[in-house]
Image 1 (cartoon, rainbow, N blue to C red):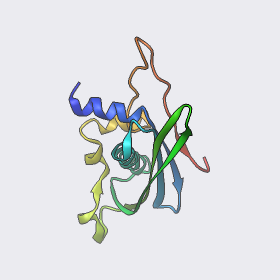
Image 2: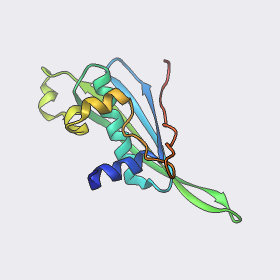
Image 3: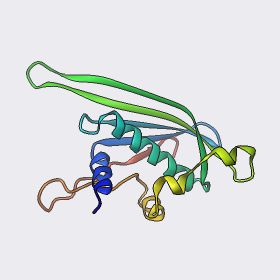
Length: 146
């Protein structure tokens, strides 16, 4: 396993993503990540989840219309405090023949050579094992209205 693959697997273990349709060609991706993920992890999981959704909807090209990040602390003085991270992206799908297609991002290129396997699994990344021989539960991608 490459170092990049290991990093991406680690990031998936600490994030949950929701997809909210906004129109036929536009949707919002909301990712919430634990402290171990950090803000970059939340961004990466949200971006890869957007690429998966574009392909699931039958497209390949997309543009990011909006991108927002947030963080919040939680906890108390006894157990300690931790920082959680959120990332929201508004994504619009672009058809291949449109004037924007030349400047749009490719979902398949975003996911890499194994994009078909990633899309078939329905989430940005598999989770690593949670301890010796155990498998961590899979975090869902939640689609509103489905």
